[in-house]
Structures are given as C-alpha cells and as structure tokens.
Image (cartoon, rainbow, N blue to C red):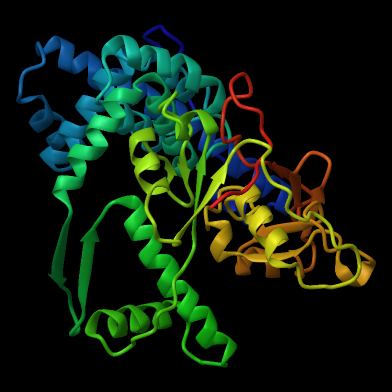
Length: 405
C-alpha cells in the first residue's frame, strides 16, 4: 500500500519456471519475494489497525481476525497490539516495512523492546533506529532497539532490570520419548558465566578426542556439574565492555555483556565490583599496553592478542551469526601459510562453522585490517560486508579498547 486504498499487486513467477532458474535468478527471486512479503505484511498491519478503529477497539476484534485468518485469538491479539503501536508509536518502523526492508516478525522485536517507553520516548527511538533497520536480522534489530532504550531511558532501564531479577526461576518441562527441558531464568551475567564454564570444560574434553558432539557434551557436562559428579574448578570467561563514564557512574548506558547486548549501568557497575574473575572487564578507553603484534614468530596468538581480538570482535565475523567471540575460533585473515602475521590486525573471530566455510569451493572471506571490515563473497559472487557495531556513539566515547581487571 502506498498511502491510498490501492492494494499492492505482486506478480509471481510460474512455479514450473523456477525449476530452470540460474543461481543468480533464484537469488533475485528470493530477494524480490522477501521484499514483497514485507510490503504485503505492512498492508495487513494497516488493515488490522483500520478494522480495530472501525470497531472502536472493541475486545472482540482479535476474535474476528482469528476467525478470518484461522489463527488463535492470542496470536490475533498480538497482531492487533502490534498494528496499533506501529501506526501510533513506530511510524518509521512501519515505513521500513512499506519499503520492503522489514517483515512483521522483525518489527515485533522493536515493539517488544519499546513497550516500557512513553510515547515521546518511543517516537525518538523510532526516528533514531529507522536508518539502521535495512539488512539487519531480528537479533541485531532487537539489540539495536534495546541499546537505544538504555540511552533514552537509562534510569528506567536500571529500575526494570533490578525488578526483573526478582522473577528468576527454574522450571522443568517434561517432553516426549523420556526427555525433559530444564529452564533456568537467570540474570544475564550469571547465565553467561555458567555457559562459559560449561563450554570451557567441553573444549578441554574435545581436545582429548571425545567423540560426543558439542551439544551432547554441554548437556552432559551441565548435568555432571549440577549433580556433583564433576568437581572441576574450571571457570569460563565472559567479557563485559564498560565505557569509562558508565564505570564511574557519570552515564548509565553503553555497558555491553558479551553475547547478550547492552545492560543497565547500575548492573554493570555491580559486576565490576565483584571479586570473582569470571567476568573480564574491558574499559572502552585507551588504557592498555597489551602486545598487539608478534609478527611471524608464532602461529598461535598469545593471550594478550586473543583477549584483544575477542573483546574487539565480540561475535563471529559472519553477518547475522551471533556466536560470541569468546566461544568462536581465532584464525588468520591472511593465512599463516600465505605469510600472514600473528597480530591483532590479522586475527579474526569466526565460529567453527563459518571458519570451515572459508575452505569450501566458491566461498571467500577477506578481512580489511585497516577498517576492521570482513568481506564475505558467496558462490554466486555476491559480496557482503560485516563490521561490529560500535560499543558507544562516536560523539561520546572514543572507540579504542583497552583492558583492566
């Protein structure tokens, strides 16, 4: 829909024609249909909002929509709420759907994160987030929106985080075939530390040629730790990035917990003051004298470079892969066998899957050490760039990480 009452018409190829597509044509079709889907969902959002308006937002609207779309009342009610918020509080996010950049699921991530904000705060976030939506996956969109919530409503974010910790719990859900799911709802830094410890033990066992998969080993190690079978004193490491202003209590935003995203300043300062060495603190200010380059003297990067690269990259270098760098593999951007140096500028974090992807025919992964940008070229010859989001806005914090702790 373009603002009038005319519906968008999408011309689809004949299914029989698709069978003869080249890889380029198939990819073009894939992108075109995704953009059309976004626009069609924007039309549906406006139609839902209009129906709700006609019915004076009566509580039976979700029932009516549920019957028409053959969905549950619960899902229909969620769509009614989403439609109302997109038109009233997030108009630029809806415009991104109109432009084919955002589908309903991704838009719902912005809606969920912004629910605690006032209308004025929400519209400010909408204006600041809109230019960053294109090309982002749902995880990136949620994080970007959450980061802006912390910047716009730092005090409220602190208060909500402290209150939410009162809801921590453990639940047991029995499943089929003699299996069950154990769910622990915990503070993010605690859950991250637990996972890091389990993963560290798993990696040690895999070096001992354990034939179980990583997932199987994590499940077994967690069980052994909780049941007291494994008495290992091994601790994992979780990076916590904290702007110097937030560490000192001057500001309330910018603290990023590896693998999770931004956390309130009050929570970050509380972690900084804990005596445990599970969390490795990274102050985003030039305060470190860590070694950055050991040239060609060794293939394996020393601890100083490993820490720096993991703190710098934060996640796997492949777009839309959010495997934390601390659980990823470190490898040379310019291969060691091709005279690549063991330096922070030449070491990149890639998860095991995407590190191995570099070896597959047709795939190329290049790293520009000057800009920190990773370039991925697919078998179709399409190039995609990836660069970690800055830890802080350039106008407030200089982007040059160092270490303390």
